[in-house]
Image 1 (tube, helix red, strand yellow):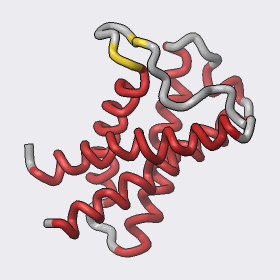
Image 2 (cartoon, rainbow, N blue to C red):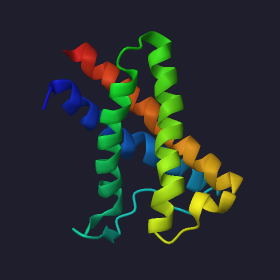
Image 3 (cartoon, helix red, strand yellow):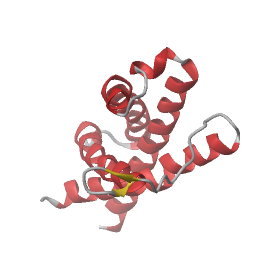
Length: 139
């Protein structure tokens, strides 16, 4: 695996744990989200904690995000990471993943739910881009 793809996976994984879950903890603390951060409930088929499964998928999304923004620089790199990070994983979650977990498709068209998804994933995109920049500077 080329080093850039590995770094993108790591950035996406770590960003899920720090930025995505940090935003979720904040939203939960403010009473905006009924869902608490760092869910340790086991998920099938391997029985690993939900937050670790989420971070793994965040790592895969990190690779996709890097492939889409790698030619950008400066503020455009961060802006595209936030926008694409907010929109792409949210679309997949709202259209497919929620239904698989027994939640209403599209978050039941609840603007708070959709807005929360955009905030969480936008924070993840920002964190992923920032971590990618840190890793690039360290090389």
